[in-house]
Length: 241
Image: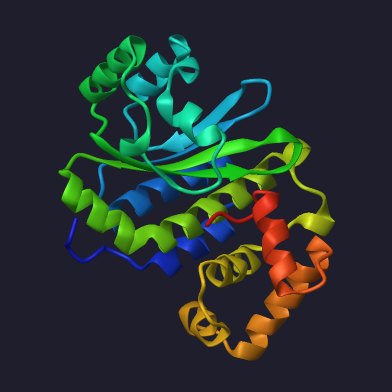
């Protein structure tokens, strides 16, 4: 996982912004998997009614098996992330139950890695989604990977969710609350403790342009100031830190 990625993250995110149909998300998930040099990358949507939609690099046979056996009901990742807003390392979830152990054994047999990291996402009308990276390696290697790429993974998760909402008009947020990917990125970095100069540098924009993004997001969220905008974005699941 330490080799130089085959392409730049910003190039892939530009591809994601230009995506015009759901099938493009599958291709982009494969590009991101290759970028991060991991075994799997998955975006998994679960509606309030239990309907599921996903794209990613798991074996299609495992996806079919997961749906057939209704593993949504026993999957510790779904259960463990549903009440959380922060990214979750799978090692911190409860895998001790008999049914859970059987589920994990079968997942590994279908080629999933022993390590996972999921970003919970929430949107309008009870939308819940997960952006997950998965790999087979030791704990130290995985801890180093997630620490190094945490910000990028959160950013990718929000870009994926925004695009998925565009493809699901019945579930899309009202225009007044819909943040652009760049507004999400700006608020996320500020929420993580970056100063404005650092945020502008990270996003490769001027501080003036950054102020435009922040003010636009503040207006959409009906916030009185930047701190208020960040708090509202977090509480509404529009950004994840």
